Image (cartoon, rainbow, N blue to C red; front, top):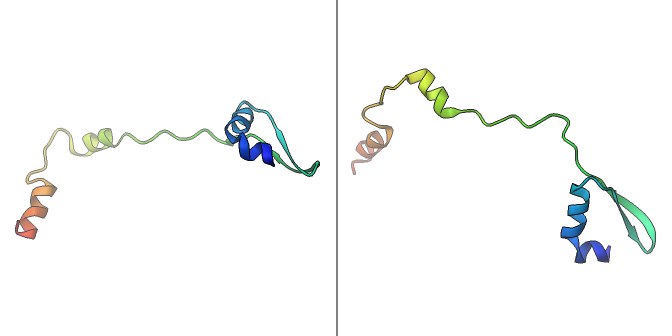
Length: 75
């Protein structure tokens, strides 16, 4: 436990490389720290700009939402 507290970065780096680390307390094994494996790859972020172009084309919305908000506030 003391080594984990003092050298956390090194232990995490070992686990990231795929190594399983045993955690002991008073020479008794109490836990294993194992690398996390994703069951599925992470989906990429959607291309929101492309989605907006598909919906609106190259049109520009006038007045802009910011201008509308300013007008509603009376600023």
